[in-house]
Image (tube, rainbow, N blue to C red):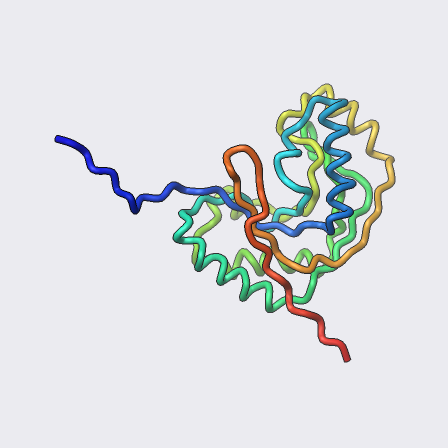
Length: 194
């Protein structure tokens, strides 16, 4: 008996939702990631643009994403641009080094509000749902060896890095099998000028 392939069948794609710094800041942080790759042989962080994760990776079929995107657009349109401040470096030993993101009230309120707004889509598993929101911009993680972590941390822990900016939109990223790419940007509401 010959098996029929369903032309309507779709594969699951991997997505996540983030805040991205302005392009000039992303370029500078990407240069840091490239330095870490060249000096410490840790390249995993280069598979995504510099970002603050608001919703960890989740799998969905393309056909399901139109409603998720509609909800993201509505959510973003109900918030003004988000002020963000980057200040220094921090780490999650023994593998993760990142640019520290200051926990501003606006940023710390945004992530749980987004999670609540998207709750009906069941994007989070139990492990993700119970993980506290720790905003950061990773420069090295998963493939950073423990011995290299110590060296990198010694190098950057006192290093100064300071940026302040407004993030004008939420960003949905999609994995292409090799790296994360910008899929859709959802503008925050324009501030009212009086």
